[in-house]
Amino acid sequence: MWSRAAWFVLLSVAAGCAGRAPLAPSAPAAPTPVASASSAAAPSPAAERPVRERPEWDSYLAAERVSGTIAIYDTADGSLSCSNVALCKRPMIPASTFKIANSMIGLETGVVDDAESVLPWDGEVYPVAAWNQDLTLRAAIRVSCVPCYRAIARKVGAERMQDWLNRLDYGNHDMSGGVDKFWLSGGLRVTALQQIDFLRRFAEEKLPISKRTQEIVRDIITLDVGPSHALLGKTGFNSPPEFPEYTAWFVGFVELSARRVYFATLITGTEAGVDALPLRRRVTEALLRALQVLPADATRSSE
Picture: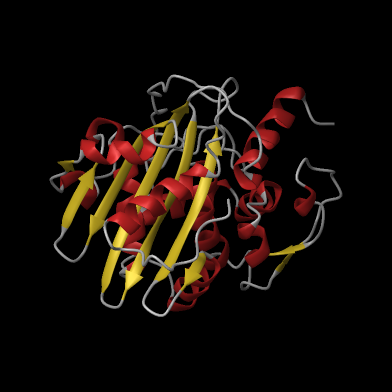
């Protein structure tokens, strides 16, 4: 049987996937990451790069009646910018954005064979109808299937999972809270700048993963492809009272020939009655269009 708290966790994450549940405003809190032997790794390159503050970008958030920050790194000129630098450096729970790394780890450990590997339904009835069936890895990440990725993590096991968090230099490397929950309600934390740095190392093939894994993960997180661009990314969501902070993410990058533009949008609160979930991509895409990164005719998010 599932506890009330456990069902809330799944319903919160389900809302992050489905983009339907209305959300109340909440003041963001700065969590204190749980210390671990692996969290003392050297700072990532993103932590060393100068960050330009672009408060004018807040207008894109304000237009949708949400608060948060947007970080962008553009390889065209090497600029790293953020609408709120302090918030871009605040460690937050990654929620379902960790599915990118979790997919890599599942593939590298052989727990998952490829994008079409079937992840069997465990028979439990979940609050998202799409989860109540067998799913391929490709389908599981598209519907953000929490039980699918929890099952992958359990099969990977705590020892191998910790080793891969260290190898990938993901966030604070903290696995406290359980091998199948540390990115949902446990100790794992990542900043918006670390999200960008992780994606940059992924896109530039600087992560310690095989070419095959690289290609599979690129494939399953591709959201839109046009004549002159490709958009890759993943959303994530957690909220109080069970979680320490309100966190709605959209992270990814746009490829334009040799140029890449990386982004990490973090929404930390909303005005009363505003559902932030469909706005994560909408806000991001609006700014990317204004910066002439996404073409005007690119497919618009229906989230």
